[in-house]
Length: 431
Image 1 (cartoon, rainbow, N blue to C red):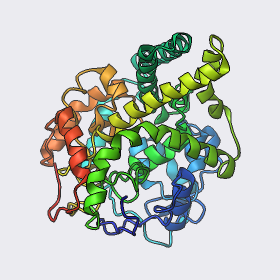
Image 2 (image 1 turned 180 degrees about the vertical axis):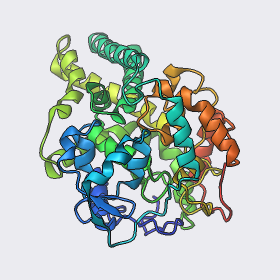
Image 3 (image 1 turned 60 degrees about the vertical axis):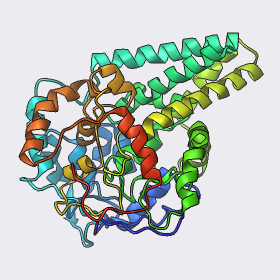
Image 4 (image 1 turned 90 degrees about the horizontal axis):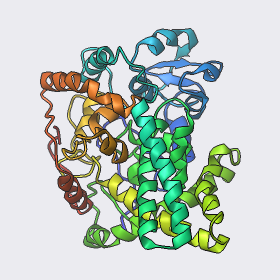
């Protein structure tokens, strides 16, 4: 198993979460650490200023949840990444309370002449003719079709008990859940609950994925790395021994298969012991078994559902871990980081795009595609990201950033190589 000894970040100024090495790793615990470390004094921190967004939460265009979840934390990265237009920046002074006392617990910068601010200004211009924070008709149609197909094929699987139907419904369920990830980043809508069909919690994903992974990619703050520890460890820890490094190759398939079941158990724990009890989204996972029970005895329906979840868990996890982030030539905390701490550059150093995936909006939506642009503009609907490609290419050229596409095989092979990597890079892994 991977070591659990404290592993300090090589990004000077990024604090190590105190709950990171706990047995049960949840979004609520991650937020608890953030509230302790961020110096937001129970308010909302942006840069070195504190704001009170309590009253604004009800009218927040993205929904109340984004505001209530982040109370008492530093939202600088989230504020910058989720607001492409300048409207939010112009409104913010209305809610100013006072200057923060403690220094920021994050080293990332958003300088006016830096990569990210320049790119965002160009992206804003490229997106001026579309309501990019609202889901597109294309994305809606793909997501809704996959949802209907998942329910229909799951019912067929319960009726026939055919492994072809079980595997097919598991694949459709995976695609539906990954497509739901597009909507989870945006304003509240019923389509974000497509993720919940797979036992995942759209609320937890807003924390673990949107607020942790997206904003602190491949660092000690990234919950999509800590969630797999101690079984799979992608950080280049010098204390990873031969057993830890190579056994991960062998146990990866069962870890993939069981990952969603573990997430389901953590969801139950968090719902009753960390949140305020179950809500509407917590009934969503039972839509599939309920539909199955219409055509099959409950025991058969439940057993078939478990098989579908197992297939979907393997597929979802395999796609996720090989989508963009894990390769020895991609930055992982422990490696030397570039001197320029611009947040956009840090994101790009931890991401690579795939040539086979980014050619199709269907593949982009169902396989975590257009990954670089999605990390830089997480709340922009995937179907609109292509509009920003010229702005991205121009800004990358200006800052000497490569836009070379890798193959899917490069990522599959690379994530296994990264699992055995225990030699942090002594020079910056830049694009």
